[in-house]
Amino acid sequence: MYDIYCRTGIQIPFPIIADRNGQIARKYGMIASDISTTKTVRNVFIIDDKGIIRVILVYPLNVGRFIPEILRIVQSLQMADCSSGSTPANWIPGQPVIVPAPQTYPELQERVKYINENRNGLSWYLSFKNPDQDCKDQVKLECEKIE
Image (cartoon, rainbow, N blue to C red; front, top):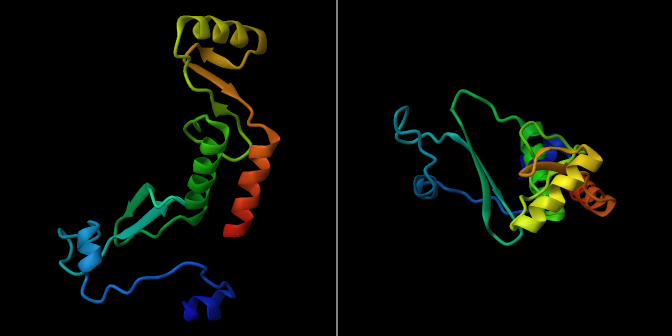
């Protein structure tokens, strides 16, 4: 942690675990057994504030992590949670989110009318909305904390 601070000026606000014998790495499937019995693959675990693992990324030993994508995933998770929607493929901050599908036939009819009036969907099960400003501000604030 001190080396990270010396090289970047950033203090890590979370614990870093030493795994000298590889016990934790084995438990979480981080050993690339087809390559080595001791070297770990490059795993990224994104864990929310409730302690729930939301995303696991596994990079081969010879491929570096792509930090902008990791940050985008964090923003996507935050936006989906805040807006009660889903982020589509290739979503980037500032873009609309997918509205959850209607659960009843009257909701479906209302959705079709909404799509026709606003031209914001492809079908009753795939329509979009712009998150409200509170969600945008909240995600921006959280990401500024990370950066």
